[in-house]
Image (tube, rainbow, N blue to C red; front, side, top):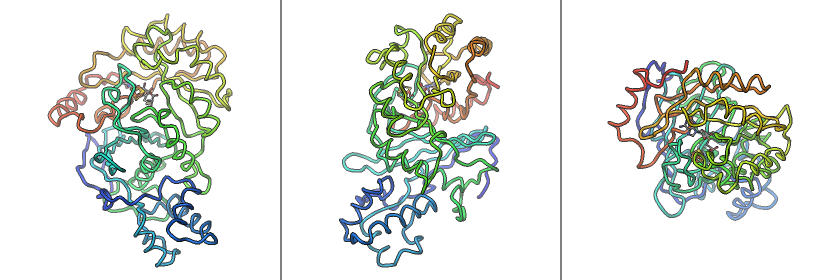
Length: 413
Ligand code: SAH
Ligand code: SF4
C-alpha cells in the first residue's frame, strides 16, 4: 500500500507501527535539550571529550534524518550503538488508528508508554493538507483540565501532561507517515503526500491547554524550530491558549512562536460561561497581555479564534464589541464554524450570519477568514478531539459518520 485515495473516510486499524519499547522503562533520547542529552550520555560513560560530538551526531540522525532505530546511524561506531540501544530508546509511539477524511485530513490516535506510574495513554494528532502548506495540529495534554462548554476535549478529564518527547514524537511520526524526511525510503504502508503536502506548519491546537504544560511545550517547540534539526520557522508555529495570562509573556519571550487566543466571547459574563478560565483571567487582563506580547507587530499579528455559536455569540452587537475590544492590538480574527460532537447542546451559526459577521469585521479593517472545517467526518476538526476510554463507541461513531456523510452540518462549502 502506498497511496490511499480517500473518497470516503478510511480507518486503518492497529497496530501500524508497533512500538517494541512500549512497556520498556528505557528513557527516550528524543525531546531532550542538547545539555540534557549530554548529561544522559555522560551518565552512561561517554567521555567529556566525546560528548559534544556524540550529541551533534545524534541530533542529526534524530531530527534531520528522522531515524527511529540506532542501527540506522551508520557513522556511529557499533559498540556505541550497542551501548545506546541498551540504555535508551528512540522508538516512535504506537499508531493505534489512522483515519483519513474525505477531504484528505488525517488523524492518528497514538499510544504512549506509561512513563512511570499508570497506564499507557492515547492522544490524537491531526494533519491538514492545504494548497501550498501542510499543518500539523499537535496535542499537549491527554484530556484537558479546563471545561470550555463547546469543546469535546473539555468533556474528557485531564489524564496527564505530555512529555517533551511525546509532543515532539507527534511531529516525527507524522513526518514518517508522510514520507517527509529526506533521503529515506518511505516505510511500508506509508501514505505518501501529494506535491507539497508535507508538514510546513505546526499549531498547538490539539488536545489540552499548552500553557498548563509550559516547560515540555517549550522544550519540544525549541527542538522543532532548531536550525540544525527540524528547522521549522517560528513564524509557522502557532500556540493557542484559552487565556493563561501569566504564561503569555514567557511564550513570546522564551519560545518566540506566534500566539493564538481562544477568545469566543467579548463580554466577561458570556466568556465566563464559554471559556471558564475567564473567571480567573478576565478579558481586560487577557487583552493587556496580548498588547505586551513580545514581538507583536502588524507583521506578526495575534490570531483571535472565535467559534460561531448560533444565537450565543454571533450577533452584530458582538461583532461591534469585538472590534472595540481589540482596538490597538495587531490582530487577525479567525472565525471557526462550530464543529458539532455527540451530546453537545450548541449549534453552528447559520452560514449567512457567519458571513455577515465576517463582513462587518472585515470592513473595520481586520482580516477575518472563516475557517473551513476540516476532517469533521472523522471528528478531527477543532474541538472534536477526544481519546482514551471515553471515545465514542463504534456504533455511536458509525451513526455520527453516517450523519456527517449524509450532509447534516455540511453547510460549509
Ligand atoms: N486548549 C487550547 C488549544 C486547543 S485549540 C485552546 O483552547 O486554545 C482548539 C481551538 O478550537 C480553540 O480555539 C478552541 O476553543 C476551539 N474549539 C473547541 N471546540 C470547538 C468546536 N466544537 N468547534 C469549533 N472550535 C472549537
Ligand atoms: Fe481545553 Fe482548549 Fe478545549 Fe478549552 S477549548 S476545554 S482549553 S482544549
